Length: 208
Image (cartoon, rainbow, N blue to C red; front, top):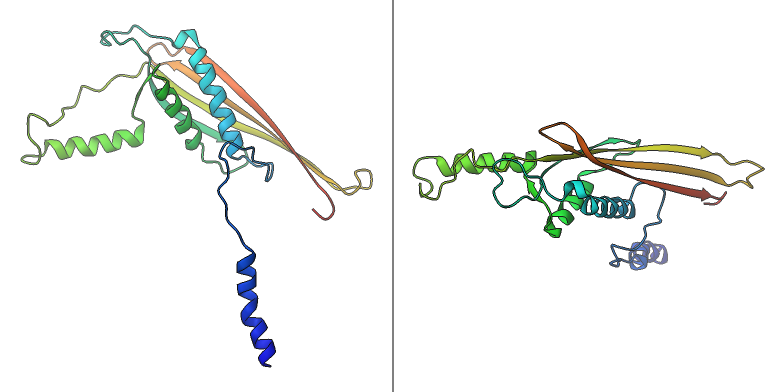
C-alpha cells in the first residue's frame, strides 16, 4: 500500500519534470501544421511592404493642404477574413503599418480604435479646468488620409483520405490568397494592388 501511494505521489512530479520550455527564433519557419501561422503572417507582411515601398504611384501625392510634406497619408483599413479559419488579421495589418512607418516613406492617421482614444482625450482636455487652455488640443486639425489600404484573405482546402493506394497516408492541402488594395479616397481609384499566394501540404501516416 505504501509503495502504491509513493508511486502515485511521484507520478505527477515525473511528468512535470519531463516538460520543458524554450524560446524560439520568431523568424524560423513554423511547420507544426498547415493552419495559418506566424511564418505566413511574416511572409505576407514582408511581401506587401516591399511592394508598397516600390510602388511609384505611392511615392507622393500633392493634395491641397499638405504643405511641403508630400508623403502619402494612409488610413489602414481592415482585411476581411474569407478563409475557413479563425485568424486575427489585425496582426497582419499592424505589421504592415509598423514597417511602412519605420521606412519613413509614408504617414499614417489613426484607425478607428485610435480615433476613439483621440476623442476621449479631446473631451478630457477641453473640459473646464482640467487642462491648461493654451495646451488643450482642438478638433479640425487632423490630417486627411489620401489613401486607404484594405484587403481580403481567402483559402481553399482539399483533403485526400487514407486508402490502399496511398499506403494509408492522408493528405491535406490548403491554399491561401492574400490580396491588398490601395484606393485614392478622393477619386475612388485603385492605384495599387498586390497579392501573395501560399500553399501548404501535410501528409499524415497511419500512426501520425
